[in-house]
Image (cartoon, rainbow over all chains, first blue to last red; front, top):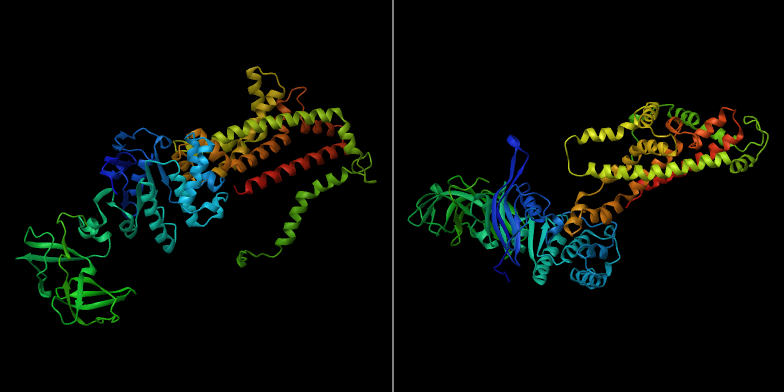
Length: 361
Length: 262
């Protein structure tokens, strides 16, 4: 499904806003390759530079240093209308004075397609986004979800080599957003176009992407598949930003993980190369709570019932807090109450050792 | 509906407001009423008549002045609106040094006393050696119409989502195609509104025209001034009432255009 050719090459790109002493480095030597036909996501908190990077690919922002290449050809100096990429804007930016079909035809007209050639393409794109009956409507007569689809159809109509999506789902309500996530994935598969998607929603990124680039404060933190990012976070920031994580300080010795007064676990750590103090990250669903089993000793500090699961906040005996998730699939929903003494056991490979030189969250 | 603010309720607001409106509009009402007066003496009501309107339609001098006024107003409107649109586009574009200063310069003609502009224009034309006539009036009118045309266009552009122009550029539209297909259609209500205002300001102008119009370039307001010097006749009332009608029509149209959604 994912080709090996590189579609977009981001070659040590920097973006400086302002000049002299007050200059702010919004993007700091970003280097990454986006492959042909992949669903690539730029993920990070607001202000991390992900949208700036996307706008640089589209041509709306200048590159301060470095280069962006599309299939080997540098985009530097090319204006937005000279780049074979199209954008789905966060606000959709549909032309309010044009009908749905006129919006979709716009890019084709500008590329000099004949009206007779445009018609079937517009009809096909309308079908693709399931809006065939809406050709004559104007954008303000459509719901948010429908406008989103028109924006997609409009950007896909000229068959761009790369489709850029800027927080395109964030204006939709939760249910519609989930639907559109599946829809986007389907469109990407059916059209075979490379998608570059920008979002601050880690769940969205995990759901849809072939690969994810996690960004923070203008720096690239990690690039990898959703599994890489989730299971093997490169640093504390990534571990904290993606999913729920407890950070624990422990000692590695003779294949054992020791947590002072809380006791020790014999479970394997992913990186055991060095004995000694270790900064560890662990997902709540990889820990197990019991009242009388084996594991680290602790006391339940808080119980958060969430329907599908319950999260227990446990204060370990050595003073460190950690979260344990329990799926409510057996009917017996409450394992323990606040104040109960419990044991926390870990599934094999639950603990991930973080790089000591990692970034602070 | 907005809740009324009790803190802002004062006694006597309604009668004061009514008095103000009477003060503003009673003279105009009197003028319109007297334009239908049958008596030769304008201020002495003796009966209803359309005669003065018919006389106006028959008066070659009035018709010639009207023609001049319309030529100048139309020309000045087209020129001023074009300049104003270009200025507004430049001001709405990328920020640049001195932008606030230029914005102030664009609006300043609204505040400069008209008599100053009039004398300055006259001196300027004389210094250039231009013969006073329709052309000099047209140039002068274009200049003072620009800020009137500029303001509604600028307001319209400010309300325009900058992403729309980006979307057009993203869809392979060059700068000119973006303007013609996206920006212009969306700011058109503002452009038309500005044009209407420019037209009416030009049509009504007296002071500047009086200074820079040579023989043969007499406009309607200048002609009316000439008539009054020989005494107020019902004919003057009728011409004024007609101008009032045109003004109201254009201002209303301008307002309606400005309010209209795209």
